[in-house]
Image 1 (cartoon, rainbow, N blue to C red):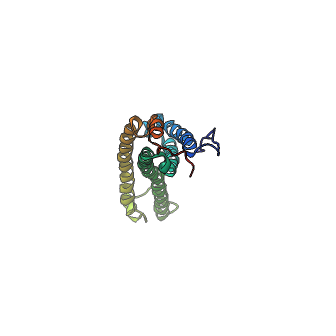
Image 2 (cartoon, rainbow, N blue to C red):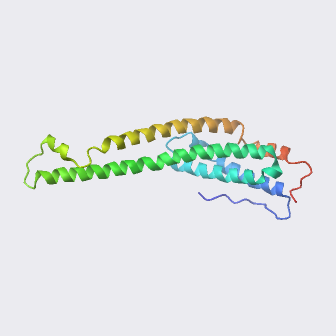
Length: 191
């Protein structure tokens, strides 16, 4: 996901003003995924949302000394969001790998059992399945697959609760107002 451009940055402008411009764009970028946040199947969008949360977090962390406690608190919220979305993404990446591995093992077993039957065989005895070379691996992989899917559902539910809370509070559009109200008095951003 490509970061949105921030317009109006001027090196002669105080840090706090430039920081607020950047934060506004990064916050809007994150909030643009609000619709996708409510769709557990929006795998790509949830991953992009994680990247947007990371960008917002970093700018809030870097500017917290100038913008005050609201920036530090916003960074913590963004980090929590980024972390849970990262865990969801790990599940989204790992499940297809487990499925691919199981498919390869099944194909190997089918080929081995077929080859053992011989080229002129008219049918296969069900007992031939006992000779499948990978037969003992499936249970563990199936269990891992089930665990990853269940974990993803639990993490997604946690994410959704966090997101709904943050939409109304910590990372809501009024974050910019809170940041403007909590800048360090007398700090024009120049040191």
